[in-house]
Amino acid sequence: MIVEMCMSKNVETVQPDTFLLEAVRRMTSRHIRRLVVLDGESIVGIICHHDIVRALPANINPFSAIALDQNQPSGRVHSCMTQPVITIDAGQPIEAAAQMMTQHHIGGMPVLQNHRLAGIVTESDIFRTFSKLLSGQSGSTRITFDVTANENALPFLVSTTKALRLELVSVFSYFEGARRLAVARVQGGSADPLVEKLWESNHPVVNVLTTLRPSIRS
Image (cartoon, rainbow, N blue to C red; front, side, top):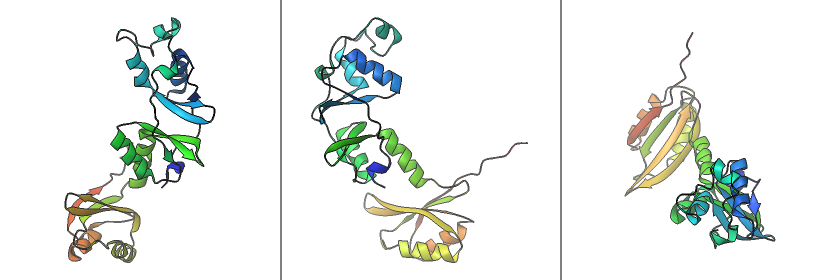
């Protein structure tokens, strides 16, 4: 999955000379935590909830109703926006966005397409996306197994789940220290036979977790 598929396309923007009060009002009304700062079509900064809070005295909460009623704060966006801005291309994989946010300790990034602002992707967008990618229906089973000795597990999973009449919902692998682990999610029946086949094929099973079906109360 690429960034374009999970980003928010309706980006709220401000100009560098926008009053902080207006930035606060936009964040509050849209229930968002960051605004992209544009000078014409060029991205010149990004301003977040905590940027505004840090720019003011500790006794002032700019996002309180009292502050809004009293027309505070009085500064402008350019005084506390973050620059330069870390951006990502819309065609990049979603895991690249996650890695960049982790590396730079940020919660969101403007997304570019043909060098122009096309959207914004946040940690919440990535969390929802990974949740969709890794989840299955109620009653599905997630199997974590070791592929260090034999990494070519996908053909085995495809053929074995087909033979067992199971649906292979998703599969991915990752490194944990010196080990390489794979996680497969299956549904459509008991996963016990697949677990046995994995052990027999020299893929030690680390964990098996079945998503419980919701209980029905009369």
